[in-house]
Amino acid sequence: MNDLDSLAPQRAPTNSRPLLGMTVLAVEDSRYASEALRLMCLRSGARIRRADCLRSARRHLQVYRPSAAIIDLGLPDGPGAELIEELDRVSPRVGVIIATSGDATAEDAALKVGADGFLLKPIESLGTFQQQILRHLPADRRPNGPYAITDEVISPDPLAYRDDLEHVLNLLDGGHDAPVLAYISQFLTGVAHSASDGAMAQAATKISGETGADAVAPMVALIEKRLQTRLAI
Image 1: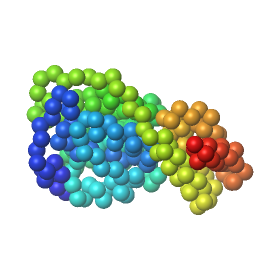
Image 2: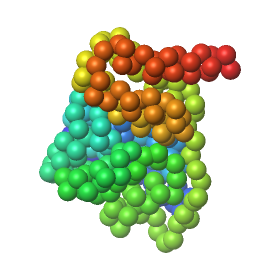
Image 3: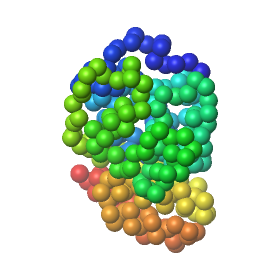
Image 4: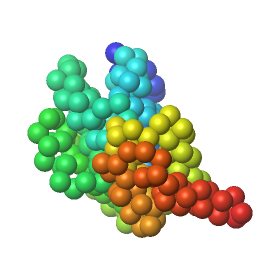
């Protein structure tokens, strides 16, 4: 595993771009959440690579070592905590490991398995994002002197939310058994909450523990309504 930062020209972080020269691996299944992270990295000067599951993340990590890894705790092929624990034990260690979740109660468990910090979804504040990474970096990787703490709020492209809704419909094409619906429930509840779609979050929560097409029919109807509305726009 190569250190990707060592393969690129070194650029010192600046007060306005405090993560300049860093490579961030975002392990995130939601396109909407990934778009928010992409914009935050862009504003901060960091490069970003994305993996949408544990398997994809491990393929990335066989090739390079990122400066920081931001890992969602609820991934389609297993818990993000599993990857956090792996990265915490490997040597040399990834510089900063940050866990993310829409469940605030998940923070303690993430820190116990090796996460340096925790970002509660929705991740909207650019300043919070930057500080969560910078506070865990070695001193020589931080900007020299004080840096501006921005209060900028990041708003992802609504089309990324549409991609997540279409992804849910694609998952349902594969069946309506309990594991599939359990994953869809936690995935869509979090995405809808981030997109300020309360009705969708409520519909997604209701399918937890259910099975069969009838159980998801109201949620599917709402997804199709959202997609049709966006097409009309």
